[in-house]
Length: 114
Length: 413
Ligand SMILES: Cc1cc2nc3c(=O)[nH]c(=O)nc-3n(C[C@H](O)[C@H](O)[C@H](O)COP(=O)(O)OP(=O)(O)OC[C@H]3O[C@@H](n4cnc5c(N)ncnc54)[C@H](O)[C@@H]3O)c2cc1C
Ligand code: SF4
Figure 1: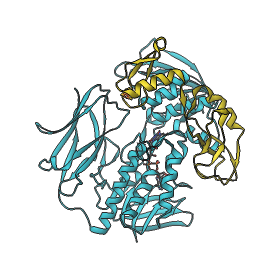
Figure 2: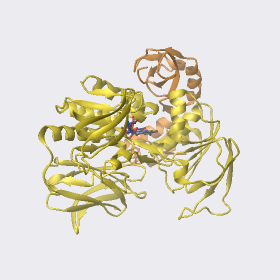
Figure 3: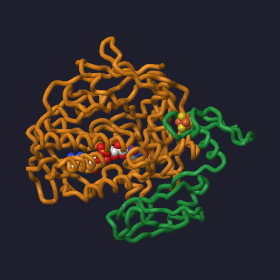
Figure 4: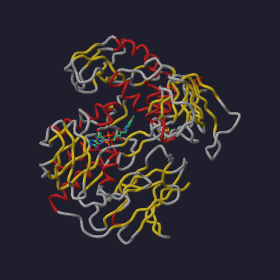
């Protein structure tokens, strides 16, 4: 049994997930909580936002984010991977700055024009 | 003479300028002291913006980018590197820009200067004055825009969203965040941020605790945290010592209203912003205010919506003249800290009026009641309410017409 807080809406229901019973969720007020609780234990994912180096722009750092959520366990490795990226201006909002981050199939995109 | 001068080019100013343009104003200028548009969003690189407005989860810079592009496609003039020094009741605007000190005039003004962070001085912590004590927003700017880390071992005082976001951000960048300490018995930030930023990284949140002493000579070396009683007084014997080089303060935001006060606009002590009507007009005709300068928002989506109303109202004022007639006063009742707007034009308000407020404590299943004297006018149900999350209700104007004062209060259902 694991207790967690649903983050899908401001109610923040306290969920209990039963790993031994096919990840059955209790404590949720709506269906979204059940889906969240299950995913959170089976394969928790997060969108990663960070910055990468950029030359020749008004700022030295370009804000970037993963286009989709990636497995939570890969967050720190992803940050290391992104430390290797070095951009040169101009880069546009939405441009892919790194493809297929750590084999997740998820691209990393620029978050602004620089 | 401009039709509209917008002061501040953050999300509020951009949305106001854009909607005034859409309503037919052409001679619009945006005055921004920074080197670029976008305001605080430029440093908020995390995602979670735009869920309401664009039905997508964008980062702060991406959200700003959308509005910057919308404004760039219009003939709205943008003046960067331009600090507004003073505005007068007759709408003269004194500015300092690379081209020097000058005065411009406008038929209408939108105030959208945002807010700034409360600092250590504003909350007075005993102890020495070493370096290593930052506001969370300053640390955010260093890290996200300049690539500089504020420190390696971090304690965060206050559980506001900026502090929570920085706890995650600095952890991912290799710092050790030892604790987040909150004096109130509940968190000041959004639940989703507690989960994603603290729980994800096993950072403890100490509610009803505060920092009671700061130590260190040149650089911060450590601090003491103690539990507090209901009156926020430290309880002897609860001391915890932390060995850290950095303290981030996330203890609230204050609307930036020097210009507003200077112009003699009536201020609401509850919000630290101007008193506004439902169309975001202040006590001076033709001067409007929107965004964080009016009241502190947690979601930029609501800033954009509110600011669009301010821009439309400014256009309406210039094209059709001032709004006439008296108004209905909106008061905060039991458990409600303030309301925005504080006044509603009786005859000219739109059918649906957005009213924003914060409750003073945490509520479970509850009701928001709009009343006047003993008459209940409208009731809204809520499964949950907390001071960290701004409440939003939509009142029907025709239900209010017969009253002079209405009160917004909250109670457990
Ligand atoms: C750290 C942080 C995290 C946040 N996280 C989220 C989130 O996850 N999701 C979400 O939806 N919202 C979030 N918000 C809220 C949202 O970003 C703000 O509500 C929004 O940016 C407020 O917009 P604004 O235009 O009122 O103020 P600002 O963005 O502060 O813009 C004000 C502008 O006015 C300019 N200005 C001020 N005074 C003058 C002057 N005298 N002359 C010329 N220019 C002036 C400033 O330079 C600035 O550019 C967050 C806010 C912060 C601070
Ligand atoms: S379970 Fe449903 S109601 Fe409860 S927090 Fe999650 S989304 Fe909200």
